[in-house]
Length: 326
Length: 295
Image 1 (cartoon, chains in turn purple, blue):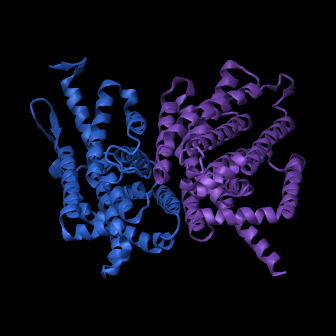
Image 2 (tube, chains in turn purple, green):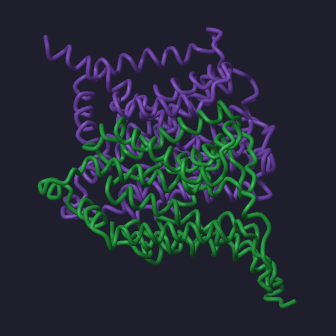
């Protein structure tokens, strides 16, 4: 069962806390130094936004045990709202991001309330169908610009002071947003709320009999995950300066699941690793002319059959085994 | 001409007919999903891809080998069914003891892989498939003109659905199948080869999807994306109907096709979203679905 694996990983990572901290610090140092090393920063930022998106999804799936197949709805509504607010209303970036997050949160509350009425596979199908409903609304809605989406979004000045069109300014602002979001995910997982979620995932009936309002917890984590996914979508608009139908299409919902799966479900580092792997892969595939769906599908199958604990889970296992041998 | 709420009856009947045709495909696909779910306990995300492969098999048969529609109608579903059996044996069997979520993820991956491969080799654009000669033209019913091919699609899929339902509910084979859905280990203890039944059931579900694909080929264009867009609507249909009942899946499929047709007449922009809206209403009023048990 998934749940057993996740628990095993959870205990493993708390034992190995020292090593994980060091790895995290090295990654952070690389991230902060990246603009000075000649790395293509837009790639890093795009991958970071998706890493936040995948972490938000993982909060719901890996830690809450709820598989949403329509998480793109929240990413997309955040992206469209921020793009519209920045371009049409001319608000400052921080207001645009807050509005995007609010839209995603509200939508998360509504979709979540509907989806938790059914469980398991029905939950997955309902979220997928609701996200598709939103997709069709965006196709038709006049403000969303149909096939073109909302393009040439102006980034503006953060707090009216810092011009985000400066490459370093946009880089560090988006890095700060994404790291902030990841910190929230980590904090939630380790909070009492996160532990109750784990209990519900492991044994819902027992959690109910202990007096927990299971549905409130589920709705809570769903909404929180939606808000963070919306934040990721808003940050993406700041980076790429556009919101298009690709941001609300079911393909992206599939990709975010794949990122989480590749990196390691139910781990904090997994979705981040998965996002960088998949964005890197997509970039190189775009040049080769191979349909990305083919490769992604094969990866999905490989992950489910042989690498269920993901890249991070795989290495965490190795480290753990090496340690117990000594 | 008679008008209903400002809509000519000609247009109304025409759209209802188109609705009924969409409904025929929803019914066929949700029937296959329900059967597979009943025995394997997985939602077959590859169902849309299998429907698409069925349509492509017919197209390839016609354009590469000159095989006509009627032969393809038999052959293509068999090919899709065989591929389904292979998929069950090679992939799904390995994860049977894991959480059902993995079945969903695996079939989703398979769907991406299949759809991506067809996109790679045939491009994204739709390919036309001609109507079979015998079914061209239509007949005048007085209040509307009924195209022959469309009448055929509705009748054929209704017959296939009914026969499937009868086999499952009224024959010995169906009894075994129902027994396997309720308690596979007990049935195995009686000497029935349940693993083989599982393979054949998955293959049969895929066959139904392939059959739907061949029938869809002359109406919609044959394209790699035709499966996934239909499948998401079918998921909504399945949520509305509940997968517990085979008959329910069929009734809901045809019914929602009609609802979609009505939406096209009275408020066209809503036609792509109306089924999802119905799903929301059903979730609010009857969370277990119209024919479902609480899951």
